[in-house]
Image 1 (tube, rainbow, N blue to C red):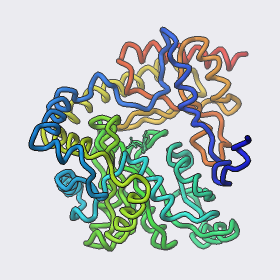
Image 2 (cartoon, rainbow, N blue to C red; image 1 turned 60 degrees about the horizontal axis):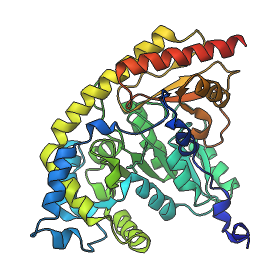
Image 3 (cartoon, rainbow, N blue to C red; image 1 turned 90 degrees about the vertical axis):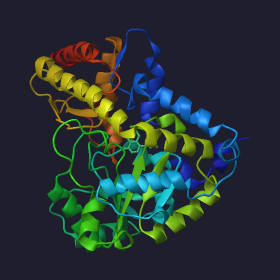
Length: 404
Ligand SMILES: Cc1ncc(COP(=O)(O)O)c(C=O)c1O
């Protein structure tokens, strides 16, 4: 039988992630890959997790760790997150926190909660591919979240109306964004809030990389800025999505959402319907590890990844030909490179793979897929020597392509 004919309309827009398809090609020997977007497994806090799992499976705890639990999440972990958020200027109660299976699940739930078909989501251009994928399942339209643009809120709202819905939220990652590595200034964050107030929409703040700053000063999160203004989390429109994936380990799939209570209460209902709860044993382990080593562990990661970021920026400066530009991130895992306008990231990848260097072409990160002369480079997975060698290879491929 032909199952495809029976699939719902929403499935037609779903396509395999370019990144995941590409990662399959990377098992060749000697390839230098800047394509991944993942933490270096050499720095997982393995001993702390071994100890935590032993604790979770001890006679006193195993009954809880292996049992069903509340959809909201493990209370001691939510209490740790409340303390963590307080250090970031967000005062909240555990009832403002939902534990999710990674922040990816939070993005899916938020799409489900807010987006009717043809509603508009404002996103950065480019933005996190996984957010586009999560929201796409709910058949929205995307429009640009662009503080520098001179379209008025009325025009943005009218455009959404002419698409058959209304603007529901803006989504952004203000710290060291995936894919650009860019960080929004305090003024830009405030203008996102002002725009959201004018449109009366929610703001989804993706804080996946917030802890990974290697240089410069911390800037308060959008939720912290809004809280400072409104004094009370339950009056806030910003929904903050956090994750342990980039700081501790992604394999346990533990993330969180912090928001006003009515939003969390509704997301709990979605979670009950979708997967009941995030794995109890993983939440217990993450709580144990976070309490034991979070701050020193993240300080160690900052040193390692910071050195890799510096190595990548200086290799780009040394090797890249004229006409190629790149961002200068202060944290995160990515540098975003703009190629000469005539060059396609996708075509370049085919040539680069032959020279044993890989990256992700940029087009997939744009909601309209229209900009093709960009590429994303990951620096968290390779040490400094490898980074220099890989960037030199890539620069040669670009040079050969420009003169071809
Ligand atoms: C910006 C951003 N948000 C969210 C995620 C999802 O992470 P997780 O579900 O592991 O928390 C990622 C993963 O790469 C990401 O880059």
